[in-house]
Length: 93
Image (cartoon, rainbow, N blue to C red; front, side, top):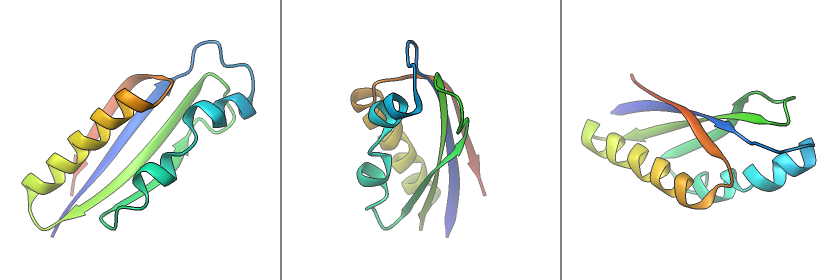
């Protein structure tokens, strides 16, 4: 069993309220949390309007599968989320 924690910090330029932040970043649970091998949560920057941090825990039988799933998450976020990814970290356990 292999586990990775993927943490992504976002910048939300021009975001003026927590409601707008939820609209721009919202849907992370629906997009990624439905996959049985992925757990997702907002892990930081809860009270800031212009930033957000999300963590994804990915579990798979091989390291290669874990890394592939992390890459797929990053790619999908870049295509679908209205924010700039400013920091991405991966921690393999």
